Image 1 (cartoon, rainbow, N blue to C red):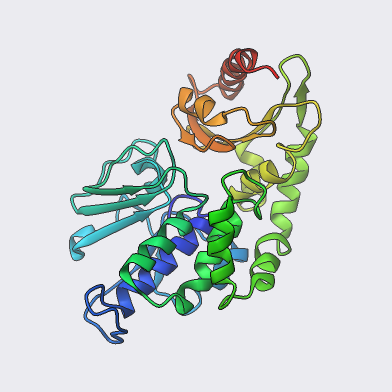
Image 2: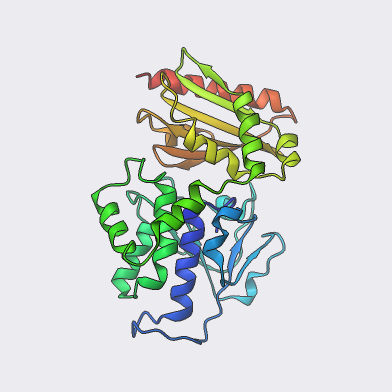
Length: 319
């Protein structure tokens, strides 16, 4: 799973792990007790509302600086456009292990030894659905994590990438997975700590009427006060920062150790992936992210530099 895993990251990891553990791509038959040892890893804690997907799974929260990949033959990264997104470390070195990189971000850096990148897919779990279909793997034991990933990464089908093909896939998955259970966990089970962070973010909310974007930044101390729920930033970006009338896009920044993590969301179709890329990040046209190093230990100077770049971008895409 990638740093601060979301539903698509968790769902992808669970689905591929189950296939590796229980099915043979050559015989297409269940091989329970097969010799493959599979471990799901994440550099940060999985949010509580996504842990229902990990029941009975072998997973571990690890520090990539200490994790020994030499015990393993293969590392499969999922839903991650760069190695730093995988590791959660801004300038982390890739481990010396064969890597398969399966992703759906147009900004993917092809950092794997083998790269399967389908940039027009609505979610990484959609990519996996068709991969498993090609392998003729039974979809029933994989339906819940795959459906959760697709629902999560499309914002419950609000984003334009969710097209007719996506709904056809979802229709097949819903034959075996409980859509209502997934919706309840993804959108009706937010922790109190997340709500308190949302309050702080909204208290700092500003609208640039001239450049037509909304923004907010939150300091590290506030996040630490509530247990560092970094996903709270992207959750609120989905709900509020792409929904404000009179704006084209929004952004939410959260300070961490040495950098600011920023989530971008488009409201009118402005391609925020280009903005994220200009700041060293990437993602999709409607939802992207970046990390910006804090300049000379000055949080204020860094946020002002970011806002200056955002305003220059906004002037080129005014609608």
